[in-house]
Every structure is written in C-alpha cells, then in structure tokens.
Length: 267
Image 1 (cartoon, rainbow, N blue to C red):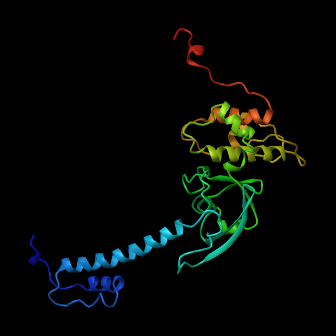
Image 2 (cartoon, rainbow, N blue to C red; image 1 turned 180 degrees about the vertical axis):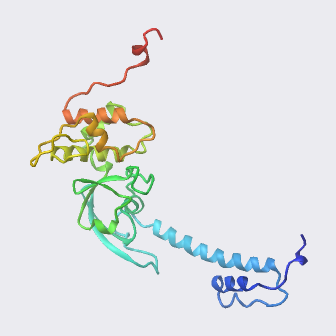
C-alpha cells in the first residue's frame, strides 16, 4: 500500500494524542499536507522522551546506596516519601522510601538483602517470609513504612560466628531443599513455628484445646498444617517436616524414605 492512499490530515484522536504527548513547540505541525509517517515520528519522539524520563527516574531510585547514608537522596519530583528507621538482623537502618514500597522491596532494592525472595508477590507462596518482632511476616504484603521501630530478621541473620542456626543445619542434613528458592522463607517460618508451638498457640489440627494450653507437640500433621503457607515447587515437603521435627525434639529423626537398593534389593 502506497503512502498516497492515506488521508494526509490528522484525525481528532490523533490531534488529542499529540496534545497529550508533545510540548507546545513540538505541536507546531501543519494542519494540511502532513503525512502519517510524520505523525508517527512525532508520537515516537514524544513517547520516547516520556520513557527516557521514566527510565532515568527508575535508575536513580535503584542506584540508592544500601548503607543507609545515601538512601535518603531521592530524585527530584518523587512524592509521598517517608522516613523509616528499624533494625534488620540486629543492625539499625534508616531509609527514605516511597510510602507504598513493601518491606520486601526495601530489603532487596535498598539494602541489598536478597535472602527473602519475590515469588508470587501476592502473599501466597511464602518465599518472602521474614521474622518481625519474633513473629513470621510476609514481607511482600508488609509496607516498609509500617516497620518503624521494629526488628526484622531475615535468613541472613540466623548464623552466628560462622555457625549455622540449628534449623539451617537440620535442613542441610535432612535434604530439606532442592532448588533453594523457597528455602529462606521455609526456614524463617520453621523457626517462628517452634516459638508458636512453645507458647501453646493452636493450629487448625491441634487437639484438646484448653483455657491454659501448654506447649504443643509438633506431630507431622501439626508441622504440615503450620507450614502450609510455604510452597515448595520441588516437593521437598517430607524432608522439611523431618528437619523441623529434628530441631523440635532435639534429636535425629528417622527418615521416612529409603534408597532404591534398600526397597528393592534385587535392583
């Protein structure tokens, strides 16, 4: 199709689009005889400018230092910012963040703490689980601004003096992970779960509820119920349960699986 077959004048919709995208100087276009390829050039020029501005702003936001000192320096024009001070793995942090930024994004993008993973980003997979003031929390659903004065612990904060937390060591010993993507959230949930059981907090499957409950014995069913918010696409659930039971009981837990040559000696 040749260029001459097009209507050479702008439609009303095209004019409105130009008014929205272009500056006053750029809008000085001829009403008659301007071909559509020129119109497209103008639109691309305007749209490209807007995109470049957005990318520049985003790059500036992403370039903030993770040490907290330069985290307060935001690009001009950014609105709705708040200052939040809290502890992360025992270290005081102070950040200037967008009031809509989640704790997960603040940890990963502002503080370079990448243990909590962004999986579903809807609070359904548990990969972003952290411990806030002793209780597990989904960081993708928690606003950073709501963490003022709180103490946040991520997977990076459990090992001390080069020694793994017992739950971390148990996950390793019991092969409680495969790809490892969900493992930080799994371990955070498992550690918080032990505290919940010790405090007598009941789950859906807890039997014999009393007005003054004591510590809950973590059966396999209890653990599966309490860990149901943490999804493992690799399917390492039996080993995760075994790892938690081992730490809960303070002793090695026998594996429920067997090797191929044990189950079938003839193979």
